[in-house]
Amino acid sequence: AAVIAAARAGKIVARLKGGDPAIFGRTAEELAALDGAGIPYEVVPGISSAQAASSYTGIPLTHRDAASCVAFVTGQQCLDRETPLDMAGLARFPGTLVFYMGVTTAPQWSAELIAHGKPRDTPVAIVRRASWPQQRTMLTTLGELPTVLAPGKVRPPAIVIVGEAVAERA
Image (tube, rainbow, N blue to C red; front, side):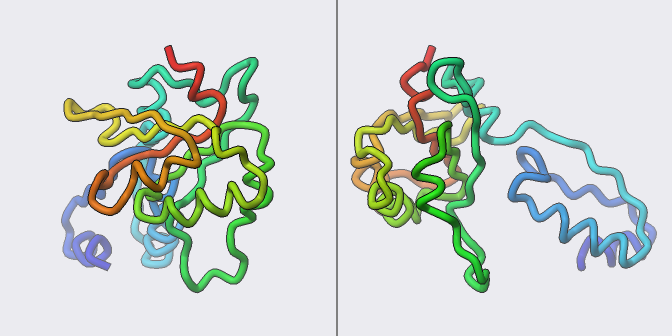
């Protein structure tokens, strides 16, 4: 609404977002609103937080022996969503899971993954402030994740990388 109002007032507007605006950035809703208002725009892609975390920590998201695929998962589902995430499917996923916005909900989603068969000893990396000078990387396991992310211990922004590829860290 503010972007549309400013554009209609004749201003040139930049909506900056850290990371790739098309990954959990509500790009679809914003572009639909701009299209609906008849306002031209340009999208400049960025590097996703997962890619930055991977590159800056030496943790591969995919690995020939450990993970042939990667899934980006929201740690904050829309509450009015009819179909929740398929946690059983994610527990069986044969690659790396990257949780965005999942620090405060880690006790719930990690417990669900374990309940659906993901091993408790699955390697996990928490990367806080990926690519910033204050970047911090913590290594743990899926079973220990709720303890490491206990309330107040780690504050967002952080990416949580789950899977065997974490053990392949350079």
